Image (cartoon, rainbow, N blue to C red; front, side):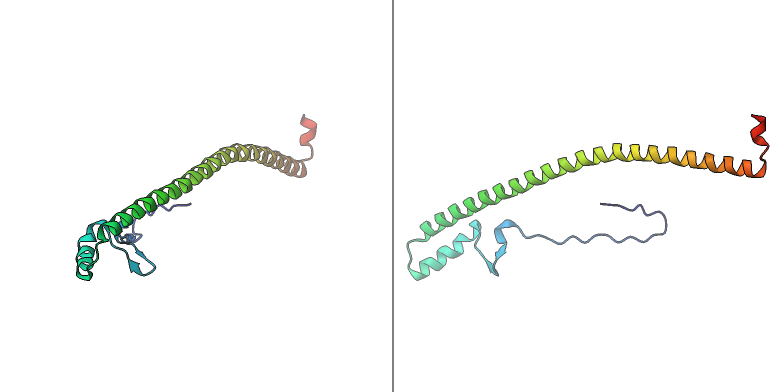
Length: 135
């Protein structure tokens, strides 16, 4: 991931984050399921139909809702744990890369210094071959 630092005169735009609906009203398959707070309207509908199983349906819905939340939390926990392990491995690799890059850069600097010295000596000897006699 990279980032930029904008200095003076560069127009920036704020990020518009989208709103996420609450878990109680998440549409599943184009259908919004009732929340725990909306059972009163279901009770009225059941009473109009003459049904006595509203309490059973409500408790079954609550149980299913609770179990679904628990399974969802377990899934998210497993995903977070996997991402934490992946992040830890990446940090370890980056630490090793820093040392490797430093070692490679050191070798490159020494090779560059030798090449520069060789070139300077060659030029000096080409211009003034008697310089070897002084030594």
